[in-house]
Length: 327
Image (cartoon, rainbow, N blue to C red; front, side, top):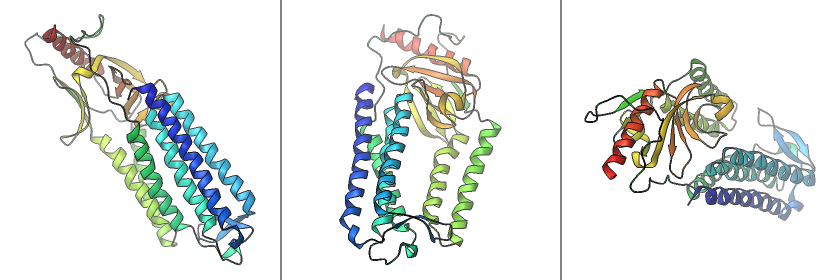
C-alpha cells in the first residue's frame, strides 16, 4: 500500500472507530436507562468515592463530545505529520474512552443513588486492553514498506557529501544516538512519576494496574533508545541495542543521506520514535545535528547522532558503489 492510500484508509478507520465507540456506548446506556439512577456518577475522587454527577442525557452528550473532540484533535496530528500510523492513536483512544465513559455509567444499574457507585475499574481495564488491541491492529493495517531503487539504481545526487576513502576500502560508520541531559532527566522523571502514582493508587485501593502497565510501556519504548547505536555498512543503516536490531533500512531503499539540524520539540513534538511535522519519521533523542535518509516511496528517516556528516558521507559512498555494481 502506498502512502496516500494508507493515509486515506487510516483516517477512515479512525472515523469508523470513533463513530462505533459513540454509537455502541450510547446504545448500551439507553438500553438500560430505566435501571439507572438519575443523575449518574461521572467522576470519582482519589479515594474511589463518586464526587461528580450529571443527568443521564447530559452525560451521554458530554461523552460523545469528548470522544469526537479528542478524535478530531488527534486526527489533525495525522494530517500534519502525514504519517498514516498516527491515526491508530485516534482509534485506540476512542475505543478506550468508549469503554471507560459509557461502561462506568452502564455499571450503575440497580443502584438507588449514584453516590454509591464504585470506581469503574472493570471498564478501565477492559477499555485499556481493547483500545490497545484496536490501536495496534489499526497500525498494522496501514503499515507501509519503503520502495526500492529502480534498476539500475541511480547514484547519490551530485553535490551530496561522500566519504574520502579508497574505492577498494571497506566503508562503515557507527555511533550512538545523542541524548540531551534534559531529555534523559525527563524520561527518568516520567517513569518514576508513573511508578510512584501506581504505588499510591495501590495503597488507596485505586486502579493501580493500568498505571503500572503504562509505566512499563513507556520504559519499554524509550529506555532502549538510551542505549541504541546507529550502524552504517554495506547492508544499509540500522539501529541496534545490545546486538539486536530495532530498525533496519536496506541500502537499496535509500536515495540519499545528508546532515541536518533538528529541533526535537518544534519539529517532532518531543523525543522518542516520532513523526515529524514535515512528514519525516525518526529516532529523535535530542535537538541538534542528525542523519537524514531520503528513501524511495517512504518518509524520510532521521537519527539524532553526532558525526552526522561523516555518516551521511559513508551512506552516499555505499549508494554510489551499489549503483556502479548495477551499471
